[in-house]
Structures are given as C-alpha cells and as structure tokens.
Length: 244
Ligand code: FPP
Image 1 (spheres, rainbow, N blue to C red):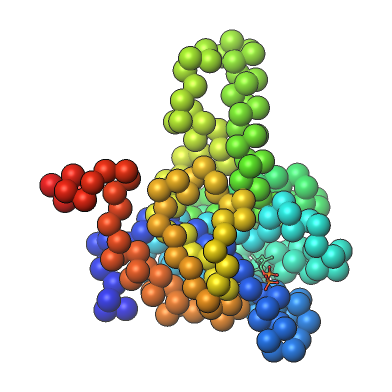
Image 2: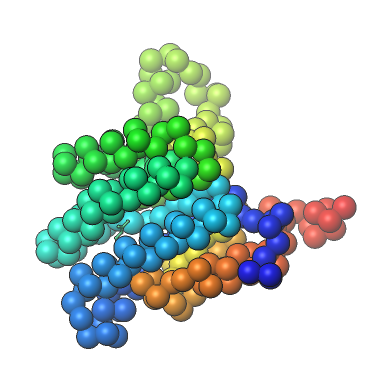
C-alpha cells in the first residue's frame, strides 16, 4: 500500500477476469466452482477499488462469445450474476457505488434484466464509484452498434456526415460519457484483448498477471496499480514533450 501514490491513481480500471476454469482444474473441482470463487473475487475487488478511490471499474463478466459455452455453464454464470445482483445491490448502495452495464442486455433473460434495472435504479444517485459490468458484451458489436446509430441520424438529417469524428463515435458507444480506461488488467497469463473495449483501450496501459482470477486479491490489484504508476503515458508524443 505504501508503494501507491494516491495522487496518481488510475481513474478507470478495466479487468478481463480470466482463469476460473483453470483454477477449478487445478483444485480438481468442476468449472462452476471456479466461477463461484471468481464471483467472490469480484466482490472483494469492487470493495478494494472503492476503498482506494478508483472512480470507474469495468468488469468483463460475460462476453457475446460466452453464449456459445456449454448450456450448463451459461446457466451457472447467469445464476451467479443473478445472485450477485440479489445480494450486492444493498451493499453497492451502502458503499455509494452506481451500477452501470455495457453490452447487449436484450439477450439476457427477462428476470435478470429486471434485476439489473432495479439495481441500477437503486444505485442511480450514488457518486463514489461506478461499477460497469460488461454483459453479453463484444467490442466489435459495440462499434457496429454505434455506427448504425450514427448512420440513422445522418439518414434522418439530424447530423451531416461531415460532422462524424472520433468524439461522435465515442459518444455513441455503450461507454458514452465515461473516461477511457487508464489501466487494463488481464489475469491468468493470457495476452489478448478478446474483443474487450477495442475502441476505448487505444491509449490504456496494459497489465498482465499469471494469477488466476479466483485467486486475485487486493495485493494483486495494488501490484497492478504500482506498475501503472511507474509508466510514462506518452499518447504518441516524445518523453521530452510530456515532462516539459
Ligand atoms: C473466465 O474464466 C471468466 C468468465 C467467463 C467471466 C467472469 C465471470 C465471473 C468472474 C463469475 C461471475 C461474475 C459475476 C459478476 C457475479 P474462464 O472460464 O474463461 O477460465 P479458463 O480460461 O481458465 O477456462
């Protein structure tokens, strides 16, 4: 903790929570047990980020590709999400955390959608931190979705195509209004983006750890932040330009 500079915290942390299945294999239990342990790590990480003063935490909880997993596993992941919403809404409220989501929610079943709606409603006035759950999320789908919305506006003569620029595209993404992630963490020793926040990660610092997601603790989080704080973010400029 004393290695962390509280004046240079990432405003927005995004996490690809990977390795639940391998954790289960390592402990010779079923994959679902790995996801259960992963859900506990979600709770602990949200708490740790809130305590540290992180403003935005985006968690890759379920990708569009995850729909193709075995039916039993998809069911179990949905049930864990359902459970999370049921038992954490009060907790989020108490901690001053606002819940948001990104992704194609209409693919989720109506009872979970209703729980998400209620959790968002219950936490909408909170302003200490935003927990942004990526659910049924795919980065390419998100960009296509934004392009379609813009095209429709051009067609309706609401905007002129010459007005289309990077800001406009950003404002039509699911993450509209949120700052881009400063730090992306991926657990379990995989070095991929897996279709996560493709547009938003353009200048994000990437951090990979071999820790499997169910084993991820506050110490791992602090290590990732300490690594982030040692980096120089240049956004395409030279080091001299940055330090001037
Ligand atoms: C990757 O593990 C993890 C996921 C598929 C999504 C993350 C899900 C959770 C953390 C559990 C529930 C979440 C909430 C919000 C309650 P994997 O199965 O891909 O692991 P593997 O690559 O080792 O097989």
